[in-house]
Length: 508
Image (tube, rainbow, N blue to C red; front, top):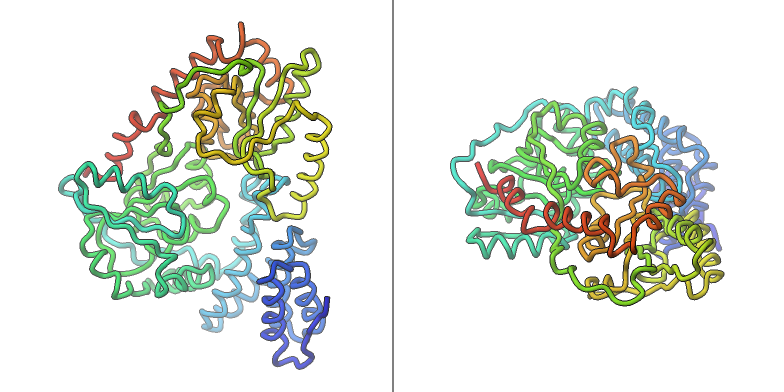
């Protein structure tokens, strides 16, 4: 590695960040951090040092390492944000606020093997921010939009998304089939809008609004679609949600939907909730987290609903194949947040007395994590899988989940953190016995027992094995599995859920 660190103070910050970005763009985040660390050590003034320290901390987090001085970096950035704002410099203040938020909400802190500091103790998490006058201004709502009154069922719906269209396309197709006119805009593909949705840009727009009620203008090329819409639906409570809640020129009622991912980002916090008529959460735990960590949603009087995701569960009902009675499965296993090691612990507890038990790990073999601690986790996991030999099978990705589930008698949810865990529900619909770990990150927020039947939920691998062994004459033929299958088909199948979702989205 060659460190290219400029020596002139007036170009130290910009040049060092440019060099670090070259490394980062090639995936060399440790090298990027080293460049910034060297520049930070050479910085003469506090202003340059703090900017470089924030950039360095982010590079370390991208490399999967939580900085030892993270708390100091955040405190310094917030102090600088306050100083800039006191001097009337809104842009630089917003830049420091965005840096502090980026460090605190980085995925390395919330989706790895360590507990999320936000979910574990959100009051402590926000303490440094609550001491910041700039952060206080950031969250003000000085000029709420008037909430429009709905007169009739919606006939023209505009859907705003950002990049991920996984849930949008089937919903749009169904609504069109039901006679609703639907237009879909992917803001990530809009060259004129995408730069406005960076964290830095959103924080500055939110701060300017918080200071004096100034809203950024709606881009002219979107004006016709926005004026046409009777209701605007924002899918994913992320960048598009914040932006749509801020811009002027939106007069139609706005409905947003939030999933698991968004709760560990700053986007619910940055949303101007008085602009949002209705918010849909995919699970009560997700609602509980957002209401606690972005309390403006409650103060603004946003109407909240809990409606599960779209899942065609009836298609999973098929006869089990021979051997299913001794087969466990974990679907989508290759992320540390799914904690497949817990599934191996369950398998080990079962094989103490009967070596016919086996485990299917469904999904790609390559880990989907980029965090350093996750590499170690996956290495340990791989060693355990190799030792178990034929008792564990990594199936690879499949497009035909219902067919694969014919082999499965026990469906596991071993995650640290989930929303509704759709793969689990598909397994239950197939007739497999559900065994759900009491997800550690959400245990204090109600956990899976807040919306699944509580008998599904266990607190340890040993308790999981006991539940499986108690299911007679075999897990997939037991009354427990049949009862779970009836519940999921009668409660969570899209044919059952859709009228509720449509009413929230479309009805007055």
